[in-house]
Length: 197
Image (cartoon, rainbow, N blue to C red):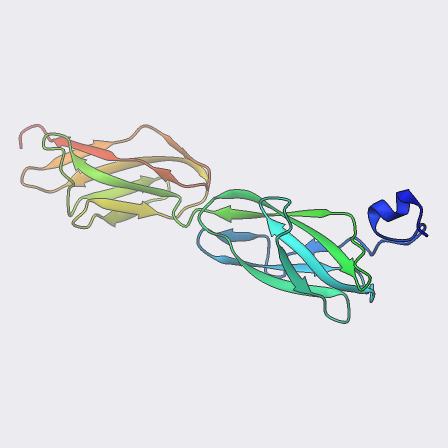
């Protein structure tokens, strides 16, 4: 008969837990929002491990994947649109149902577009189609579509937006310095009538 202490944990006294899994990212630990990331679990050849339990963003461990004979498994996870650092939690389980200590890994989800916005006529409050929006010091220009929307994918840093519209009437405007941090920013550019137009 098992002692109360060992019965409480569901294994005989002195039973050894399986190896704690390592968490890796075969294709890198960074992915764009809306994408997928590969996650690899590895117990360094511990052949007693039969499966891994894991979860992303919380410790519920609601997912399970069988381990290969070499004590590894790789899963592909949809990351959704939440940006920033995201945790992965995992445990390994052996053929007797014993569970390892929990391991945590981290990957980063970046915004697909680091800057989006809309060109707006400051006198009518309507979107401006055909406005040229320039991002400095990157020196990148885009022309807005019917909805006045523009978007840029650039590295984090300090930038300034300028917008012009040839008219009629001719319009222009600029932003103060913006800090892009790779998490995504929405910023509207208001275009005012040029003097003399």
